[in-house]
Length: 330
Image (cartoon, rainbow, N blue to C red; front, side, top):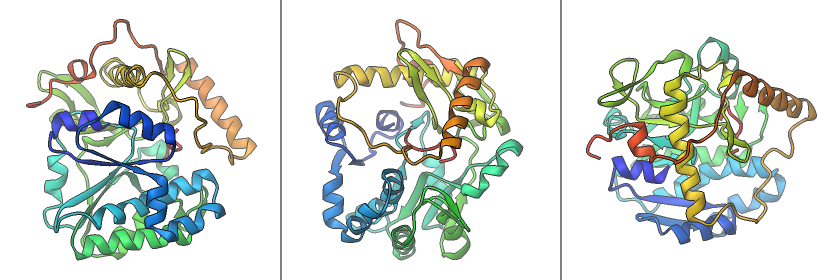
């Protein structure tokens, strides 16, 4: 994600919250420019309210809590009127996000919706807006909204729907309805993903990848992608009835997976350290549903085997213009 964004926005700066020692070591080994590494223990020391709820929540629920605490931490160090954006790690950028910031010219908070199509409308109980991209301006309204989000998540941030709440995500619906200076960014090339690709048409052109005929693809959200077996990557499109055309397979997923594999090689393979089990509290019924979706995905051909030799994601996906983290509904 960071490399793809830096290719289209060379001045981008990142603060990466590392949940494990292996993550921190891997980032230090890569020596990515413009990256500040933030170990989880450091955030917990800076935010006693976060540390206080750690033992009350499952690993998944605690992970959901972290984004809302990370944003105020970074905003406190930001210059006045700068914009701090929380990004999920499973995004990949294909063109500059400048249009998204332009949409915020008179706003303090910018949110992006799921844009569910008819089959996935049922998932709006988890939130109409998506946590994958959440932008806050370092002004009074932006800092206030970030503090409000943190307070709500410290009060309650569970991995199931309860009334009008779900994890950290459903609070975004309340934020846009209740707080000043909050807008929804509606650019169709932002946050294209398995749950909304039915509503849009991605096309490869001489100008790069475009959405709905003329809007540049800014970033794709590769939620639910996992390596089912060595060299066999299963996508989550089938659970959303999302199309898996040749463009989607060969211009989106295959180059993205090639990027992941190159980075895996650079850090010397996947870490041996056990990663947090974000799905350990899934009910047995949901576990069976996940297994059935995996079988359906294989039957539908929604899997990718990277080609050899692997080509660079930048050159395959788009000529640049001048250049499971969580459940799939997340």
